[in-house]
Image (cartoon, rainbow, N blue to C red; front, side):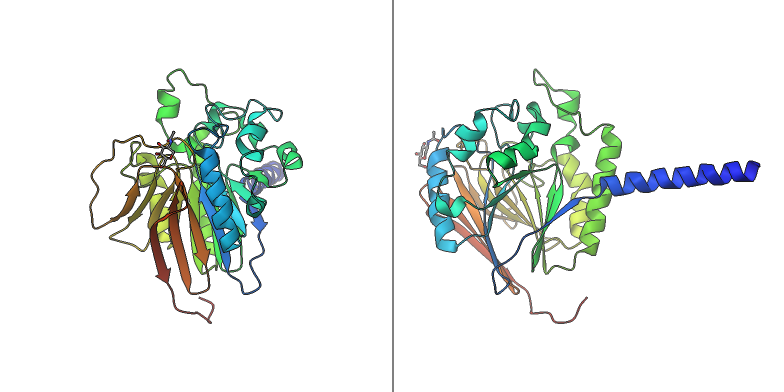
Amino acid sequence: MPSLMLLSLTLAVLLGFTFVLSAAELQRFEHAAKADGSLRLLVVGDWGRRGAYNQTEVALQMGIIGEKLDIDFIISTGDNFYDAGLTGVDDPAFYESFIEIYTAPSLQKQWYNVLGNHDYRGNVEAQMSPVLREIDSRWLCLRSFIVNTEMADFFFVDTTPFVDKYFNEPKDHEYDWSGITPRKRYLSNLLKDLDLALKESAAKWKIVIGHHTIKSAGIHGVTLELNLQLLPILQANKVDLYINGHDHCLEHISSSDSPLQFLTSGGGSKAWRGGVSWWNPKEMKFYYDGQGFMSVQITQTEVFVVFYDVSGNVLHQWSRTKQLSFAVQ
Ligand SMILES: *[C@@H]1O[C@H](CO)[C@@H](O)[C@H](O)[C@H]1NC(C)=O
């Protein structure tokens, strides 16, 4: 009798455990690449201001460059709606800051969006709701998810819940933490799932996207929590690029101890904040305090990054090549 009880108890624990594990798994999406497997995309961040602060001008240039590159999709690094996310699925900001701004034909592609800290000041469930996707099918915003393409895997990470100060000193801001409690378990599950997904990825290029900086000389600077908790996982799994927003600038920092590149594309609207800190010139490749966006072009052997300003001028370019590989590693 006691052994039967023990058995059923063990079973219940096991089942419960399995359920928790699978419930936490990161959602995956497949995005078809071009016929030759290549991929071209734009990255913009920190943008939703109803067209103000040059948001409209940046959108216009994104449309032109997007057309020229024949882009496959667009990534948003978060802070999609200022000042406090969306109030609900019927918030006019969804029209005024997104639908009516990014109107160019080339931008009528899938948008993959992460949440920024300003989005967490609004109704997070609303921003992730399928109702928005019904209003505009381009919209996809989730906390953390993966987009698989032929040559590159994109790992979108919900970085806001990592940052202690939003919990410890929220000032007069109210954050919507409803979906991420208990916080400790949420964060440890997320890191575990990300690590596992990165390990399982056989893609030639691994790209991680989050709202917050890991390395930045901008006004927000480095995010200590991510340096401690996220960075080691990226390095251990040979991630190629970490792409973020949060600092309202365009920036490229390389690593002296790994191939990982840190790219900030947070120039979607309000910029020119000043307050740039010194950074080791061996790692600092590029810093621009103003508005703009970034493109990423990917083939089997090369990743090519370009930063553009509000007039579409090329400000900085960088590329890395890898040998063609035939053997499965
Ligand atoms: C818009 O962009 C132009 C060109 O960079 C700049 O001179 C101007 O200050 C920008 N406006 C704002 C509000 O940032």
